[in-house]
Length: 91
Image (tube, rainbow, N blue to C red):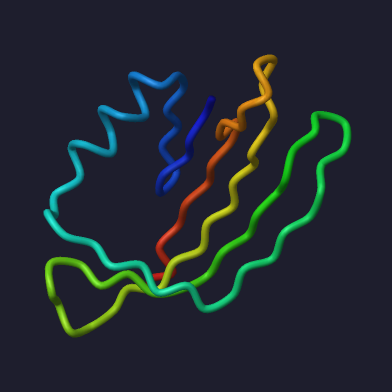
């Protein structure tokens, strides 16, 4: 799996978890505004595009975000996140 977070790339579960655990806040509320999904038939997957707001540590000024991720069906039949791209929409 690969994740892009604000232009930085992280590959593999350990690197992704390490990045997410190191983020400098303790509480995040996601408010989804739009969500678009498309099938990805070549790998039995789904491509998902989400836009919305993040409320971080009870701050009253939400941060706008966009995220695209692809869920893929693995060999055991379970889905996993193959690709994930996240961006804050800040001026």
